[in-house]
Length: 381
Image (cartoon, rainbow, N blue to C red):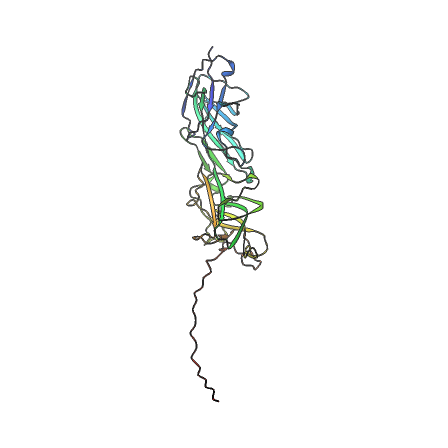
């Protein structure tokens, strides 16, 4: 009796579509060849916490399968086999029925709140990233439909094209004016939506939808990290969140209409606007003069309003954000954090929310007064 082998091959394609893939009769009667197995490529990197994954190191993922109006198997782990022509196989083997199967594949994060809800009625993944930077990781998903009779893959495989459904953010910083010394020991993205639901698409890439009712409300979340070894900025941009190998946020895509912190009219951000902040120590005169914070703390938060005209936080996109201190076109060093103000004026008060940390360049408009009326003095001898 001839058996058909099914392998899911994850090809480096653009979309994670549930397109029809045909499975060929292999002509091999070996029992080991009859189980459903997978081989994988990812469209872009993703894997362990703080590591972008390539096809080569994407070692396992989970799959739920539906066919004949019922779930065939649920949340089964498929692991990568050894060798150049690796396939992904499950410990418990599943074999092809006569009818078509829909496969929904995804990697499961170690941290954060994750759940899958895949049935004949709907196919979704729900996710809330961990608040801890080091615990965040990239996530991907894919879907495909296949039948045992046909297959065009040279491994006897169904092709899965995984796509990223989170937003990746890398923060860099530089200092364009050597008159000042800028040290960074923390980074924060404030007032973001932290929950989302990914819905698989029958055609094309699925959609990760943020929880809209927490947009710019008190329920929005901050993603913040600090590190012991401050980074001194130079004229070359450098990543600031790289201590212990942790350097990027993997976040839920944001609503397209999310609002920035209105610095000019809402200094304490009562409207929960979105902003980027860096925890900095700014000094001058070889460190002898404290600029910010002006007294007390060794470092304090500076902030920059962020809206979707600057950073859209779109699904599957990586954003490299560079903060350029003392640039020729900027305002120096941003603003005092609206929700966690540092001391600005040297008066030991921390009510400086939203104020500019640095004013404009020091300039003088010089005039020289005329001599006063001549005084004639005659000294007679």
